[in-house]
Length: 319
Image (cartoon, rainbow, N blue to C red; front, side):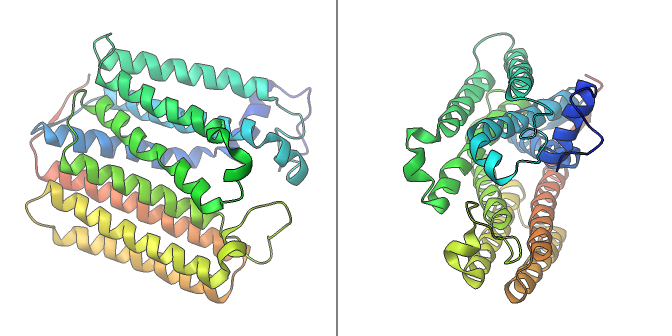
């Protein structure tokens, strides 16, 4: 919701800040940062050693900027629908405009291209090519693959098609971390983890509680029923956990006990939250599900980084 104290006379920075808080919260940056660090760690592990430097701070910001572009694309794509369903949002209320967001997107895209070229020694190398593939798919998503009316009636297929950007983003981020990395077993498992995690979070986010259902707003609880949606999320959470363990096994000779423990504990917490949602499908239960699935994602990426660091020589430099 837009803040009552903000008006068109308020500083643009304050209005943009309100939009970020509402539609792209700063707290989400943690997930994007850890995704980049995971991709970089796995890619460098494949070269037999892991180097960590301040360059990775730039990589984190560039990764965050790509998800910002995804959000801005969604804001453009859904603008008319959100005018009807969410007229009080910062964008829909006119406190900022789509033109403001386009400027942010251009800046972010420029940063991504420049950093990819830098990583590739200022040539059209693996990182830049990987960015191009991811951005091409993102543009197709923005156009809803030129079959929006048909695709929007098939919400699960819609989510599946959009989550396919995640393996492409992993490939780009891996090449930012170590340009020229090969599609090894670990990298492929990481792509699968990112896809399953994104898909699980998307389904969870739109499996709404009965107290927040409304006409014109899609919901998996409406499509599958509350218990059906809970079952789908349960299967996706179990898939996430299994893929996370498979990724760690690809990095280590054997699965460390602490990897089993961390992923097992967070999987159980997520499953318990889903069970409670199935019994009492409210908005707060749905939000709790989102939080638990996000924590499982973070835990899986964190354990992957730890496994990479534990099984390869590590060097730390300033640049």
